[in-house]
Amino acid sequence: MSYIVDRRLNGKNKSTVNRQRFLRRYRKHIKKAVDEAVTKRSITDLNSGESISIPRKDISEPFFHHGKGGKREMIHPGNKEFVSGDRVQRPQGGSGGGGGDGDASDSGEGVDEFVFQISQDEFLDFLFEDLELPNLVKRQLQGIESFKFVRAGVVNEGNPAKINVVRSMRQATSRRIALTSSSRRRLRIFEQQLQALQEQDSILRDKRKEQELEEEIAKLRRRIKKIPFVDTIDLRYNLHLKQPKPTSKAVMFCLMDVSGSMNQAMKDMAKRFFILLYMFLKRNYEKIEVVFIRHHTSAKEVDEEEFFYSRETGGTIVSSALKMMRDIMQERYPADEWNIYGAQASDGDNWNDDSPTCREILIKDILPQVQYYSYIEINPRRHQALWREYETIEATVEHFAMQQISDPGDIYPVFRELFQRKETKRAS
Image 1 (spheres, rainbow, N blue to C red):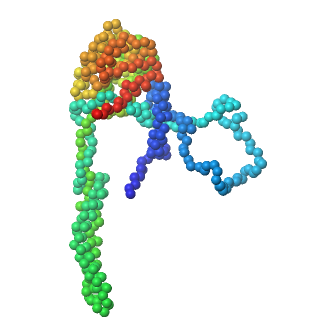
Image 2: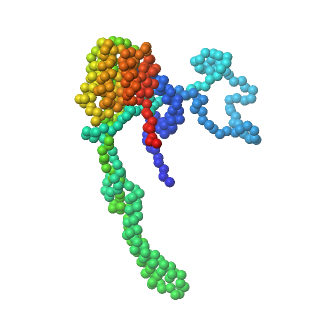
Image 3: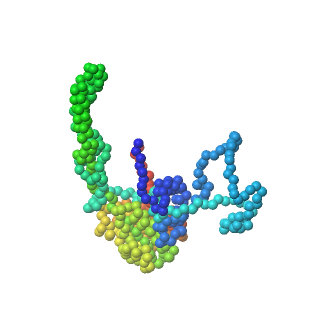
């Protein structure tokens, strides 16, 4: 029987195994708390931990106990402070005997909640659970940088850390059997002869022959013991070879409308959506690039800092951002090598004749090259002209999706809806 002992260090005297079991058991409560927390947090506080409350009645454990009836004998220990007839003072902390913060009441009952803290990593794991980039496929790779080690058999020389104990012991056993087989065979013959002599009558024994056999037996046993149990030639090592690991290169285009028609509340909702998207991409994918594009009457490629914190504004020409995305795709991200994704956030308010232009650019230049494109309208009121133009695309293009965000509470559900992991259809 083999035993595996986990000697990993646990932070703050917590059991890693027990904590993971606890998180799995109460996944439903934690997931609900995370979904509620993400809509209430500020933009700069989305990636921290969270306090989770679980009703105490939901964490009760089953236990064995004696049922009613039957005959039992029990001894109850006494105490040194009280005897029969003593009066016990009322507990301090209020007229009701409790120390809670609630108002007094003459009826009702309740149960305290169990509160615990989940870490930043655990919070993000629950936040992005079951999400993925749709239609991610492997493209042609230029300069493979990712490798993985695969087993390639057993060799005679190697790193002591990679020693194969089973194969080494098997080789050592085979060597000892091969080197001592003739000696063991002779030993068995001499032992049988000695036993036969010792069974004879003491008068008829050949003492000299018996002594010679004992000397030969002792000599053979010393010879067998001289063979080392494990020799250096017995050692075998696992061989691992480094092989290129296919990786999927992907790029996400983030297009955000910062025109004057977007008030501060709308811009904050758009930023919260893109922060969620950016955290999801960086946490779940190694080989991914993000291109940030801000636009009003003109579009501009910016870095992360300027994308989220710049206060520049102006009129609205949405097609300027789409044209810049098209040009960047053609220049830096050929579709035969990259998985290309796009996410566009706008209030839908656009210049008079620019919405049909946006639809044409998407249909002809962008959608044939991308894996997935999503449009998010940040507008609590009715849909604008850009939404109506994009509806014609959604009806015919499978990898184009549209969603509306009316208030901060819609951000996370919309994000999950756009990037929910789809079940793979099995061939019948």
